[in-house]
Image 1 (cartoon, rainbow, N blue to C red):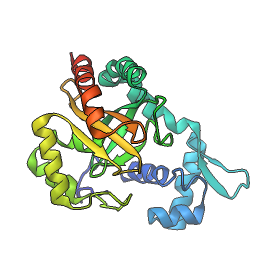
Image 2 (spheres, rainbow, N blue to C red):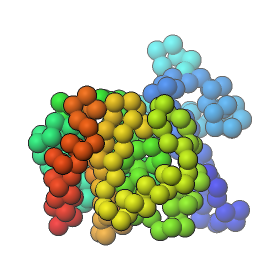
Image 3 (cartoon, helix red, strand yellow):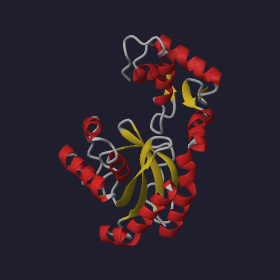
Image 4 (cartoon, rainbow, N blue to C red):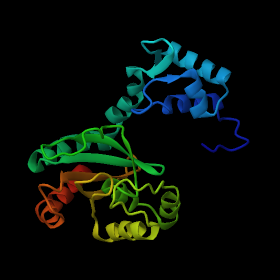
Length: 254
């Protein structure tokens, strides 16, 4: 995180505390003090003070072996408060549930956050592939329908900056990692109002997304419908559900 050199209002210790919390994830569930120091770049004594304070505040706890730290359920409170208080998320929830019921697919509301999208509401249908992606998951923009659709709402300069910051990891054998090709598809989404992505983030995934902008909260995001390639091809998905997805988005914004 880059901050101005001179900013009298900026509290760097708050940034550091959140940085400590951010190093924990599904692959790094329990971390030692040495791990935390290495992942954050802090000295071991500094990491110890932050971990101790976060334990006292209830956001971290000692693991069963007493040598590692783990997140606590209290860390979900901040995200939950956003979901409860945001008008777009509240409006979208029943429509996403209805869309999932009608299509048997996974439906998601995602919002742009920096160079990624965050899933803020999600319903799983019968035709779903990846159940590990949940509310709060952060996904890249370049290889997801949700990300591409949301990015289509950005101005050209910001879009270039966001694309330049992508990891461009080859997630599947079919992942597109050519920045100009992906940018063109995002621009096409801007023109036609939807994007379709196949086998880009995970294999056998077929996702259709439309952008959504909420003027009230100034959030840019997308509504996504994901199914498996075992049950649909691209033409079938567009023919059967594009109109439904677009009408759902209009209803959420009405």
